[in-house]
Amino acid sequence: MNTGNVRSAGPGRGRLARTAGVVLLLAAAVALPFVSSSPYVLDVAILMLFYMCLALGLNVVVGYAGLLDLGYAAYFAVGAYTLGILTRTFHVNFWQALAAAGLFAMLLGLLIGMTVLRLRSDYLTMVTLGFGEIIRITANNLKITGGPTGIFGIMAPKVFGLSLGQPRNMYFVMLVLVVLTTVAMAHLGNSRVGRAWACLREDQDAAEAMGINTLGYKLLAYMTGTFWGGLTGAFFAVKMTAVSPNSFSFMQSVTVLMAVVMGGMGSVPGVILGGALVILLPELLRNVADWRYLVFGAALVLLMLFRPVGLWPARSGREREV
Image (cartoon, rainbow, N blue to C red; front, side, top):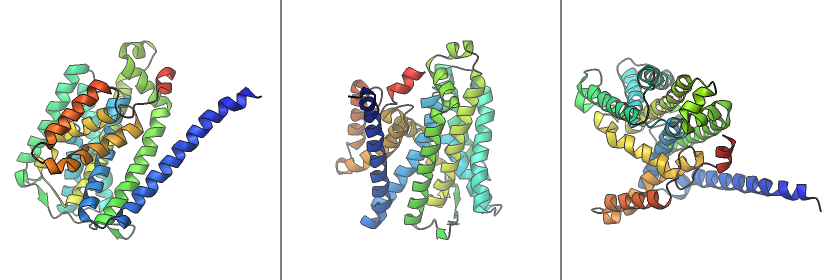
């Protein structure tokens, strides 16, 4: 009996099962708007897709590079305000405004990163938390951002002839964005850059000793994450047709970070699951409205106690490779 064939059959079957699972999930996601005509279900599904995108972006910073960021909502806000200001005040084309939203958030991430990424652990966490609040307070006081009332009347553009003002169209656009982001992040995590980030995350001193440009790779991770935050913020502004400072509070950053931690830091399928759960669980607990956040919090505590690596952690094979 050829034992080599036996060894190769296992991973082959596993890959086939994973591919079949992904195809089934995608088919279910595509069928959802046709199976359920409830606006509530569609609205919750769109919100889940937003948080999946945000969690995938933050996962590069926290999961891949090991940089704890508590101000991620700031880049979400920058993207949303950039699109709102450019389209409402300067009447810029949607596609140009969308690109500008991602690039401006990334540029801001570069400037902030060059300042704060030399810090480590708790110091970096405190600075990012403060930056998130600075952006929100600034938006609350500037005339161009509309102050406390924000910017209203953001027009829904057409994408491939479909108006994003229709919830079903917005759902499919966000689904495509999640799929593209997933593929990009999975390839990035398995690339040479991803392995450098993993070394940096595990031991920065050892990474420096190996000749890895730690500041450069930190900046690259931060800019990648902020670009996705800005891009998602731009679509959020179109979906809501308005942006205001209250939409980008500290709790937004905590919720996205919770999705990453709960799903499994560094795990692409894990953070997608986490992004879905942070929206779905509070909705499922609406029948116990007065207690739902308490129940949700208790579930998180139990998860951290009994499953500290997350519900779907990164594969141990990658860790051994590092």
